[in-house]
Each structure stands twice: as structure tokens, then as C-alpha cells.
Amino acid sequence: MNLPPARDDGLLLFTRYAFMPNRLGYCGGVDAQAAFESCAEAHPLPEARGWACTFEGAYPYLALIARVNGLPDPLDYRVVEAYWLGNELLDGVGVAPLYDSVRERFAPRVSPRTLELLLGKAPAGAAPFHAFHVLDVCRRTGSLPETIDTLDHCRIAWGEVQAVEDGHLLARVQPLVIADGKLALAAPRIERVLRQIDGRGFVAAAKPGDWVSIHWGWACDVLTARQRANLRRHTLRHIAIANETL
Image (cartoon, rainbow, N blue to C red; front, side, top):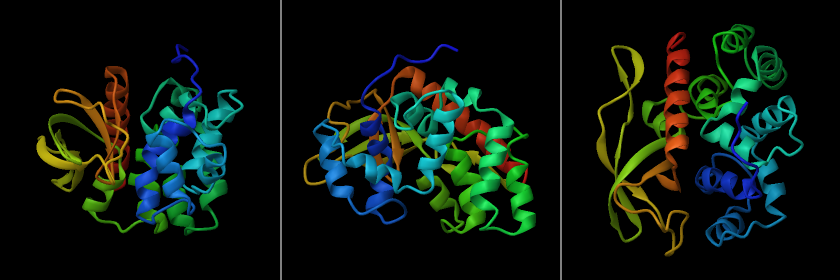
């Protein structure tokens, strides 16, 4: 398995993607502002680890990815990248560990029929990837309203920057839609994406032609070509898996 080299900024990467849903009150603890400032300054705070652990949706997936791949830290950069964007670590998880994790986590929260449906996603090819949690788990556990707009905002999107405007970017993004009764990515459209709060954000260097990741309308990071390809591939894969039982 050819993994990206180890890095020491996994906590910052986690914050890039977890900050906005936390700020909006969807998940995580109450230290969003401290985490935001540490990420904007690129100086991780040790106490932000405790904040990351409060994400009851995301953190168990990180722990699963790390454990199965023999990595001691769930906030290893490569583990965090695997969950939000996808990388080779997902291939190392396998059917049985995801199946067992889903059963342990969600059996007390859903009906036997719903649990059977979720468990079936592991042999169908699902991975501990954010889009799996959004498109299959959240819809069935009541974690989020089951609307196409909510699903589109909660999954990690990618967009090509067209212009930088004060605290926003204009980016070409493929929205998630329902077409012929199935989830799909529509033709690209221009969207206005928030990049700064009080003059600070995570993509200060973004310029036209760059690709950025987007979560709940917030520009999380400037993507490398590898990251964008992985995000697209794993997102399309999990859209297809979700469509099997839509």
C-alpha cells in the first residue's frame, strides 16, 4: 500500500472539515472558536484533541481506520484524510470491521430492519468514509433532516475557484440532486462559498483555477490533484451504494 508520507497536522486537517458543522450545532463539542483560531493560525492546540473526540459521528470512524491499519493515532493526518477525502487506508478496512462497527454503534438506535439495511452496505462496498455516513447512516438514524439540500451541504464537495470576493469564493461545483429517483451529481454551477469569518479562514492562498473542498458552504482546504481524484472517486462510489436502497 503506497500511503502519503506521515504528517503531524492531522488535528488541523480534522478541524478544517469539522469546524463548520460544529459551528452550526450539528455535531461535536463547544470549543469551535478555539479550534477555528488554532487552524487559521496553523498552530494545533493540544486541547483540541479533546474537542475532536466529541464528534460522535466522525471520531469512531477515525478510530476504526487507524486500528485496522495499525496506526496508533486516530488523528494521524492519513487517517483523517481517509475519512473526509478518501485514500488507500480505506481499502485496508475490509468488510468485517466496518460491519461490526456499524452493528455496535447503531443497533441500539435503529429498528432491526434499518440495522439490516445498514449492515448490508459493508458487503456492498461501503467504507468508513464521510459520504457513507451522510448518505446512508445519517438519513436513517435521524441525525440530520432527510432533504437533498441537507445531504448536499453535509457531504464534502469540490469546486474550481472562479473568483475571490472579500470573504467568499465563487466556485464551479456539481450539486447533489435527485434525478429519476436516484442521487446524482448534476452539471456544474457557480456557487458562492464562504471562505472567511471576521477576516480569517483556512484557504487564504486559494486563487482562480484552484480546487477547494467545501463542507456546509465553507471552504475547507485547497485540494491536491490526488485528493480531488480520491474525493470524487469515493463520493461517486458511495452515491452508487446509497442508490441501491434509496
